[in-house]
Image (tube, rainbow, N blue to C red; front, side, top):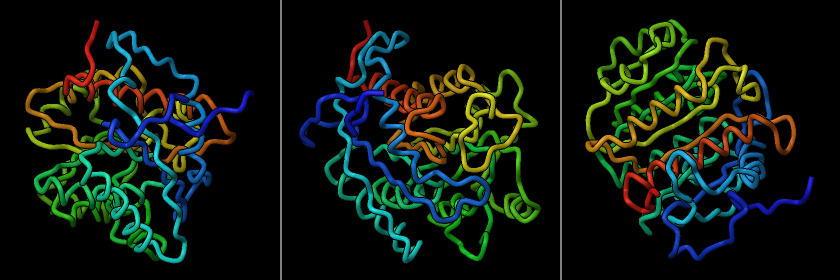
Length: 296
């Protein structure tokens, strides 16, 4: 394998002023509870992205032309999970002030809290769409409220409504919390049939949205390298069908997103390539929606 640049897609680095999307790698892992390795996720996604074609045949465009810049890694802070979250928040706020769309690469799901905290201050009515095999609604897990298993509960406490799809693992504690929390809704995997993309879209009101994508939403047959895999997941085409419908809605504004919980067994793997292509596809859909690129 040739040496590949630490730059998303391997494209030429551009000045911050010329970027619309900024890729923030956050190689943080402290609370994974099943398989380790999520700290290696961002580097693996970036390495694999060097082999993603720049031309998107579906969009009939090259989304990178909208302007994509890869930022330095967010340094992990293992002395305090709370300080780590605050550090991520501070970094993201800096780029939001520059009107950049920050794309987070995790790392464990806890990193999403810091990113969402920053975004929610710029977009006070922002809602969160989470695609995840787990509810992540615990009050604490393994003696910390900043566990990856608590991230959506912490986000709800910020005042954000959270809409989650794909859940196929939830504790009784989480279900009881869900039942008494009006601004949290879950479409469970057991109720997601062949038209789940339309069903989920109907659950989502208009407004500003942040997307948090835990790769364990996908079935282990196509995404085996993740911190907490669960059987009965979802597949590439149906996942993209949902994103196309959701992102292109006229009453929806996607302000940012993250992709988290990849735990690669080596530098470049099929799972990391899938994650890299997903990141690029989401950038492409957002860029096309906002007329930052032209199709054809």
